[in-house]
Image 1: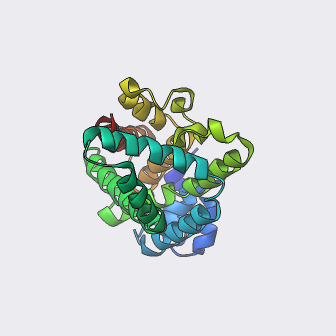
Image 2: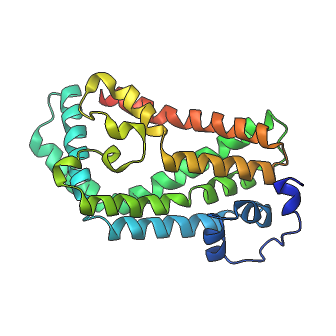
Length: 246
């Protein structure tokens, strides 16, 4: 039996539309990566960000208790670090952040994709992966499509769970951090790491490996190692933020 790369080598680039790509990535990811191996990531990235922003806006009310709890936790941490801050000042900043939430969501998602793509490209070169920087960012873009499902599953849980249980973003996550106390400041780094052991994050990591195998033309085992290293590097920003908040 041939490899995934061989099985899809005859895929025509551009032979399917973006919406088909966004559906196929769930059940035929190798085909998506093969036909988009030219590395053109602009339109897929734009569509992903726009759909993500719309879904986040439409589900905002369902996840509002989570946002309230996270803001309260971050405000308390900021006031511990800077005692001159007042509750009134923090309340004022909340209005600004809520107004800018769609823009911040789009910005952070875009930065995350570019960062993942660059790490994937750099680490891939250590294993002689053949993909370009643009192709690595394309892989990272399509690998993030499951985040759209995550937004919906988070909202669905927000609708059925009692508000007092929605005390952190991890309360609706499918990760080890779901079972940890978000207010335990002695475990902030452990919680940040546990949050990376998440169903959707693992799913994305698997898609990164598939994309690198198909586009970078390296063996599956090596592609899996590169994806795992990329996953580990991706944990560093969360750990840094946890240390700052703690």
